[in-house]
Image (cartoon, rainbow, N blue to C red; front, side):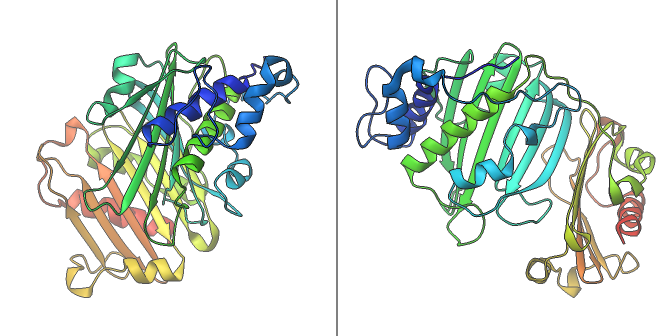
Length: 356
C-alpha cells in the first residue's frame, strides 16, 4: 500500500520547524509566507493544492520483513537536500527498549567513516506518546500543527559552549514514533551548517519522505552481525556486561573500518574501528595513558564516572595503522563497577583480536 503525504503536510512541518528556529512566519492556511521558513518550491507546491499533489510520484513503502530505517532515507536522496555531493550510512542500531518501545536507528555522515554520526533517524515500534516525547522534556519543544501523525514536536539547542548545534523532530502516529536528529558544528568538517530556512525545509522534506515509506506495521528484527562483527564473542561480551546481548547491526567500511552495534534491554556494546589516517592520528592515545600493554599495540581501558556507579566502559586500542574504540553500558547483572575488572580487559582483548 502507498500513502501520499500532500504538499500541505510538507509545508506545515516546514512552518513548525521554521517557527522554532525564529524564521518568518506562515499563513493561516499553513503555507509559508513570502520570505518565510520554506523554499519557493514548497510555496509553489502548497499553492497548487491537493489536485496537483496527487500527480506527484508515489514512494514505495518499505516492507516489514528485514525493516531497515536507512531505507526510509537513502543517502543519495538526502545529499542534495542538505547541499552535499555525497552522504554515507555510518551506523545501524537496534535497541530492544528505548523511547518507550523497540528502536531501530540509522546514522549518516558526509564522510565514509563507520561509527561517527552527523544525522540520525530512529523508528520506534510499540511506543506511546509520553515515553516517546520524554527526551524532549528538558528542552523547549514546539508542537507542530501538521496534518499527518498524531503529534509532532521539534527542538533546537546547542552545547554549553555553543560550538555544536542540534535540531530534532519527533512524530508519533499510533504506537510508532519517528525521530530525526541533525547535528553540525562550527568546524568545516562534518554535516553542513544550514541556515534556519534551509534547515526547516530539509527536515520537512526528509520527514515527509520517510513517513511516506514507513510500513503501516513496523517489525524490527534482532538481526545478526556481519563480516568481522560476527567474530566478536557475544557470549563473552554478555557475561562481562551482565546481560545477554540480543540484537546486532553492522556497517563495514574501507580499510578495515567498521561499526558493530549490539544491545540487550539495558546493556549495549559498540565497536568502532577507525582507519582514516587523519582521524587515527587525531584520536591516538598518549603513551602514558595506555594502561594495558598486551592488548593490540597498547590499550587504554577505563570506567567513566557515572552517578549509578556502573560504568560505562571506555576503551581505545592501538592496532597497527587503525584505532579500535570499545564503548559499553552494563546490565543489572554486572553490579557496581567503578574501575576496570579483569573481565573488562578480556572483553577488549577479544574484540581487538576479532577485528585485527
